Amino acid sequence: MRILVIEDEQKVAGFIRNGLEQEGYAVDVVYDGEEGTYQAENFDYDAVILDLMLPKVPGLQVLKKIRTRNLTVPVLILTAKGTVDEKVAGLDAGASDYLVKPFAFAELSARIRVLLRRGAQESTTLRLADLEMNTASRTVIRAGSKIDLKLKEFSLLEFLLRNARRTVTRTMIIEHVWDIHFDSVSNVVDVHINTLRNKIDRGFSPPLIHTIRGVGYVLTDESA
Image 1 (cartoon, rainbow, N blue to C red):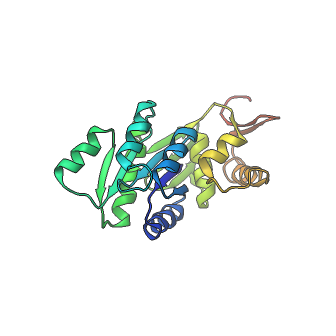
Image 2 (cartoon, helix red, strand yellow):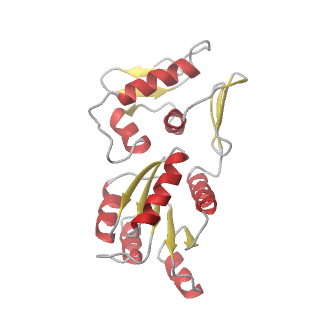
Image 3 (spheres, one colour):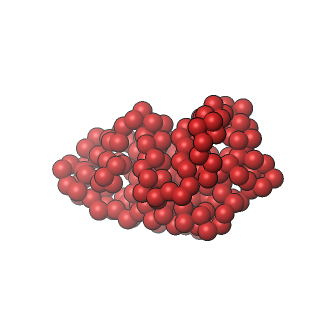
């Protein structure tokens, strides 16, 4: 899952990035409203964390531009402004949630999880055949056996499960599982796919991860 953080306080932005990355998210950070608007409009994010007090373009204006383009991405407003009128203005402009600084990272993380669940019909469980993932407890089970995955492996499998039976390209995987600084020329996607295949397919039947030559990959229990 890929998250955009638009926050001009670099220490706060770094704190958020570090915390989210430790939980397995891919995180892009920008420090002003102009760049934030560009990123939100031109890249595919699963959630946006948006400060209101931003240089160049104010946060509320950024939010309105996002919603004008009918983007349904969840947006969590994160700001020092905490009056009722300010919260109402943010929610009326299209915010999905509102968190006031200073904040505990645990609360921020929990709110992000809720927003992501809303976008996936509230379900915390993803299934395909005998493979099951719980995104809340971060557990993966196949045919009754627990499978231990590293953070990026978990994120990659989650993306494949959310797009089950749909072919996804390497570019699509990069955009959702890695951040903007990722070297798209490297073979890290293929390496992670192979590692994941060894963990969830080896010793099980049928194989679920299939390579679509020249295109990408598909997670399916049908013949690819």
